[in-house]
Length: 245
Length: 231
Ligand SMILES: Nc1ncnc2c1ncn2[C@@H]1O[C@H](COP(=O)(O)OP(=O)(O)O)[C@@H](O)[C@H]1O
Ligand SMILES: [Mg+2]
Image (cartoon, rainbow over all chains, first blue to last red; front, side, top):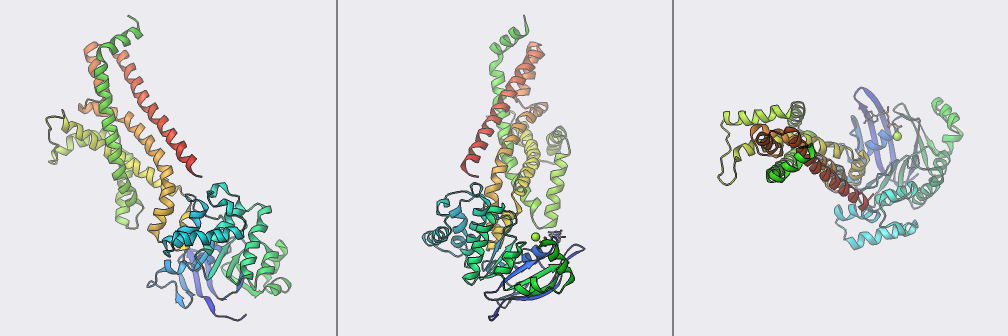
């Protein structure tokens, strides 16, 4: 895979009190790369993702985003977070705002976009997803699949350079998983750089350039998507795959 | 004369007494809750802020006030403040102004602690994911609070604040012991004149109930209206 490193993770460690959750993680993510992160529950996948945009402060190590060390005290993390989209398991749409407001508030308040510009862009996204009739709906009035697709659009509105997905379909009813995965596949097709924590093995194989197996706070396997499933080396991954496939 | 005839007779003669008491009770309750809300907000901010000594101070205050009887607090303020040289002036056109103020100060100090807890739990009841989503998109902490968290917290806080007002209406009956002419004080006055304690107390109980019941119905309506708007 060609391209520049967009995120470089160097010696990343994270502990909660005496609990060591991430133990010396080193890896790079390239522009336009789609990387899935797979592993047992409690293995540190969410913590890893949340360290990348500093929702969790790493105990030590460096997160280098476009050449800037995000852990440095001298930078304004808020500026960099705008370029790192994040999609959560539980959607986390702003409950006090309707769909349009959810989508336009950040571009307007943070980037100083005009209302017209922001709304036009939001409407474009909504139309592409067939959700334009939901502009005035509040999150509580939407299905899980609709919420998650709108959460993805909310991130896209900021024109992120990379998107982080933390189990985007785990809270969804089975019949809604497809509509969300389709959106993510389309993003991959459009060349978005993405890191995806997921339990959807078939989807991971289909969409990813590379898959990481994160277990016990370490990257236990780091392979191309096909090799990951067809020729796993780590014994733990082999037994994990036996259980889930 | 039967019980209800006695009540009727008392009401016929002494209704202005009771009305005056109601007026003062409402004034005391309203002022206490407003002051309690203002200082309670500050206290809640202190309790949640990053500066440890402030947090510790606020926590100590809240726990202490909530863990001691209002009666003790009232006496402490009423007798204690003049001793340390704080005296409310007597104003000619408001009778008993200095007593009145002592009552309001004590009630506010008390209410402040409860309001602080109402506000804190209202904010903490907002799903953590809301703050995370706001921060991850690039909003600063303060912006996230203002745009996302507080508008949701206010829906938890306002009804609870209404309940606090209802509670204060009831609790304020205690200020009668320092001679503030609230509803309880008027009732005692009428008892002293008529020697009919049970009918007078029955009237007082009904009046308190009307105040609190009306209050909680109003809150329920308000709550429903807020829910209808969104969510
Ligand atoms: N804020 C936190 N405080 C304490 N422990 C935490 C916190 N967040 C996660 N953990 C712990 O870290 C470990 C890894 O959690 P997580 O990253 O959520 O794993 P995964 O997403 O792979 O299931 C778990 O043991 C979890 O209990
Ligand atoms: Mg997780």
